[in-house]
Amino acid sequence: ALLRRSGAAIEAPQTLVVEPLELDPDAHELRAHGRIVHVGPTEFRLLRVLMERPGRVLSRSQLLDKAWAQDADVEERTVDVHIMRLRKTLAPYGCDAMVQTVRGVGYRIARPD
Image (cartoon, rainbow, N blue to C red; front, side, top):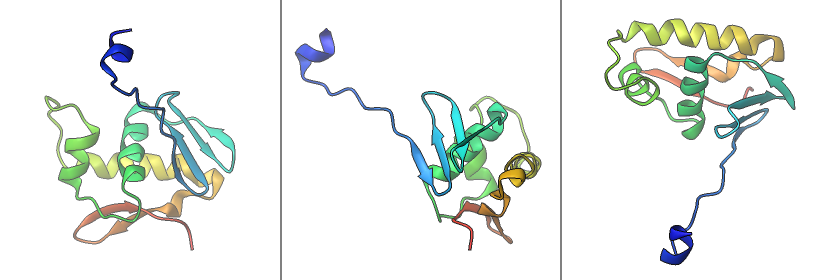
């Protein structure tokens, strides 16, 4: 009621789409080719960060800052392990190649060729 009176808009849920993947942060749901994909919470957060910036390369430290809690004491190489798990999860749907490594820089998500 207070938000309505103040005129503040409530954001509508935003589904992130990088075909054929669809990620709904509010429902904590990932779909590939329309089928639900069961993914762990860390891989979900990592994928969300990548899908919010499709095509953009993010370094390991950027991914750590955005996908892990600020007080988490993890090393940058931890990102590599979770990227590997994410690819393994996406492989049965033919989407593992969407998570691309850019040598010496970091990772990005892009549509498969």
